[in-house]
Amino acid sequence: MEQVNIGIIGGSGLYQMPELKNVREQELETPFGNPSDAFIIGELEGVKVAFLARHGRGHKLTPTELPFRANIYAMKLLGIEYILSVSAVGSLQEKYAPTDMVIPDQFFDRTRARAHESTFFGDGIVGHVPMAHPVCDELGDILEASCKAVGVKTHRGGTYLCMEGPAFSTKAESNVYRQWGMDIIGMTNLQEAKLAREAEIAYATLALVTDYDCWYEGHDSVTIEMVIGYLNQNVRNAQLILKDAAKRVATKETPNQYRDAIKNAIFTVPEHWPAETAKKLEAIIGKYAPK
Image (cartoon, rainbow, N blue to C red):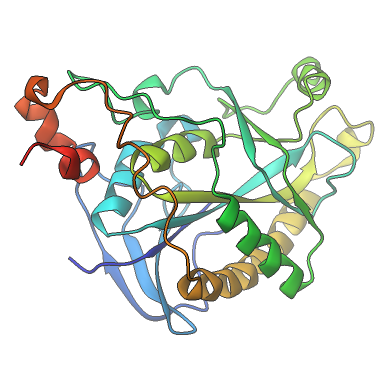
């Protein structure tokens, strides 16, 4: 299997990377089922990356239907150490305007139907991974530098509230989230961040603001055409940002700081690991199995 160091997950609108050269597809099967789509492997200005359309090409999967575990496990099989995740979001604060980019450093969980897709652990092997700081600051630095290089207004830090969807918030919910101090709202990135940490992959989000959430007084005057226009503008900017960021990740001198993230997180002693579960989690915990 071809090995790749950098993975890119594209969200709503970002279904392909036109700058990718020498493109080939890699289909993968995992113990958790099939990923959202085949991986597109290619080079961004000489840097090899693996691209995955989060919702599948053609946007076929709702946020709740996403095979989060299969997506991240497949990236682990590919040898990916760094994930740059792109996500369209709504703004919960006036300072985050449509077409701005946000690089959040926190997540807040408001999902209800994804417990089975939020961890690799279970079925006899228990792990409790630290998540106080759910994203990689080093990747955040890189994304921020790349945003500046492209000339996009960028906000560093903030909390991404992950809701269940697929419907958007009610106005009452939106106002409560604002009172809680949430910054942006989306439907996908929390599970990715948790699973990436369990897989010892560094992870960061580039959030593309497409509109203000429904708390905003002018929300009702926003048309779907306007939102699509902002989304298309964001997607093109994101493609340029990712091209620059891939070079920065490939040339950075420090190793992945999460390469041993679960070394002390597995509570079940190895002699009690069920053989079937240990086999299923081989790519995640295999290096910690007794020799």
